[in-house]
Image (cartoon, rainbow, N blue to C red; front, side, top):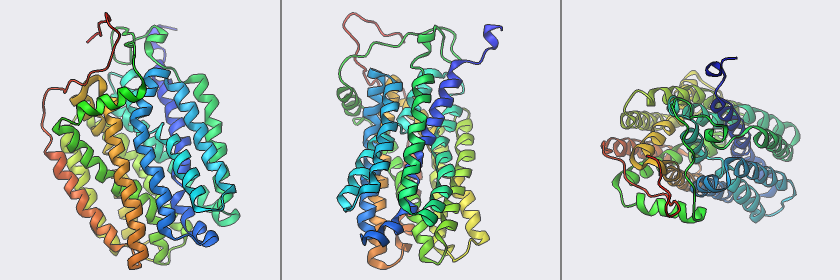
Length: 428
């Protein structure tokens, strides 16, 4: 077969990364369907359970920049295999817990570290190494992997919880995460240069630059440099609001909020799964648009429309899935993580070779926002008896994120140094 017509290995790497992201998404889909069962069995307040979710979300974000640096030093394959094992361990051990601190340890710490190691910084690392053309599109497809995981797992988990209890759902996630590990070890390659090939869309083979220093020093050094710039804070601020209005609020509290209005939990979980379905479409489309439209304008539009939809949401809850709610689900699904491809592109534009690590820190801000929203919405529900104030506040914040995005200006990349050994010249 003609070499030029063979499938480029970049597509195989992207496919394996997609499957790994789907596997990791399983446990992140469970909080909304486990909150009421855990409350009923153990009597823990929703705010306490939400705190465990917050730890998970926070570590999911804070781990990302360090994981990106670890991938540079030890390889994608090792980091992802260990991360999937952590997810499986955290999920499986929850079946033995009897105290809220054990929930925080398993659900919050172990799963947070594991999923954080396969967060969106993983996506930025894969696309940065393997793709030159179609980079935005592939970023959108891989980002949609998390939504696909939610789509695959959430209805199944809701049925398992209803029919067999929450422990059965936790064990299913364990098996799914472990099943992906052999595929990662077998097929997930590190660099195109290892195969003597250029990246997809490139014309020459570029060997990876030697990496020195520890992962922590690389991650913190990139943060120290990026944090002195205006674009970093605008991107991080907008992405923190993104996390608050998606994973933190809707992802965690939509099902219990719908249940408060008389909707069966399985029906609400099905609606949230539909968000995941339309998110796949929206994120891939956003990746395609990112290759063609100014990312600043895309972010402004995405955040602004999201804010308006959240302001309307409290009036849509009912005991059944009315057409107006279905319209919201479709619209919100298309917008869910459409913000990721343009944000990754802007980090690469502003911070060059360190873009993946810097994006890890921007994503950490995303998860800080998600953690605050997850706990805050639980407190609002416990204090006021409903979630209305949380939805209105999130809508206003999303409109603010649109303003932050439109304040970004085109400029030359900010040099964020990545250490190399003395005497070695990095290729431009």
